[in-house]
Image (cartoon, rainbow, N blue to C red; front, side):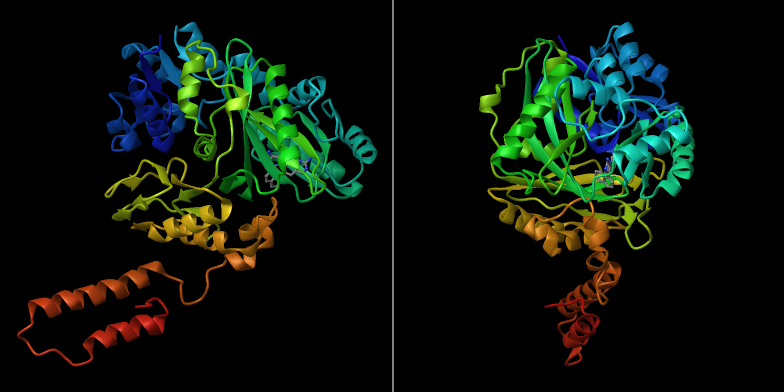
Length: 502
Ligand code: MV4
């Protein structure tokens, strides 16, 4: 029985996992690097252990250090969160060898799905549609050219060990094949230590739609419907929603059935995601399987009402799924915005620093999965994501209204965040109408640039601060004669700058 869990991660996801533990009466153990002593996930846990220096290789990626901490704290199980070691089969194996339950799928599943060529083969065998392309590795640029001609341009060269767009090259013309093949190969080697590259037909303007699945150790597999993840920039998701506005009843159920078939085919144990590309003709193709809990899992939780981390723990503990497919229904609509410490006006550069003031949105249908607090310094060594804002409402239109309200309620002072960029995204007509695909960010680049007059939030703050300061002075110095139109002087300044509407 799982009574104590070590969370081999940091930040918001570490806290998310610990929250599930607390609800289940399970003790939690945090691990942290020297840069993370003051991170909230450390204080949030029942116990905590420093596992190394700032560099992830010395801490969050250091299997030996994590195993040592697990022994020292006598944990029963280890939850890897997302990123870091979450899809590392060697880590999952090591956990088992050392007597700990790894909260995630079997290592063989992680290996099989981590290799895209073998994943595609598994899916073909399971009757799941895959993007047309090769089933084998390309051995030379001559072979690549022949295969590309056969498939027809444009094509996509992909690293077999890839993901997140690394080692991927789109090729529009046969003149480029040799050059792009070598480029994909060397990038694959540099990123994954493996230069295996294969080729797929390039799908134009696809939707990225994924299905959440759960499988237990008894062969029961269910899906928990879809998430639309097409709002991406350089393979980083920014906004996700569920249900996808692109799917109708039939397509949704067809894809759900294929997602279950995909998971069944590999004997999937735990929570996983089947990613599909869907083209404008509503044809869908398996893209990859993610063998971890995903950043955007809360939108599924909100819409289907299932705690996915709790399910992961129950499954890892060897309990049969108590959820049945016919009980899983999508209710209402959820949207998630990723809140990041980055400067969207300077190529999305990470912008670490101290949070001097923070006011998070609350209220009906509003969920914050975060880990920061006033006075906390966001370290520059890890992911710039500081949290997620998730809203739920009875229908999409209301969820968008709620997201707008929450984004305007959100105030973070001291560093640059993408909040104003997110405010612009939800007002773009293509987003409002739900008619967008993976080209959304590129296609709407103009609309996503800040409007002149709203350039600087700190200027807006300065104006308001000056005004409040004046009002307080007015209160304190009632006996002292005041200049007649002093209030309107500040007001005028604000109005002139276009930042005051009061
Ligand atoms: C594709 C594709 C078009 N055709 N494969 C990007 C990340 C990686 N996981 C797979 N990706 C893509 N694969 C074929 N055959 C377009 C993309 C793609 C993409 C996919 C999902 C979400 C956003 C994307 C942005 C650009 C390209």
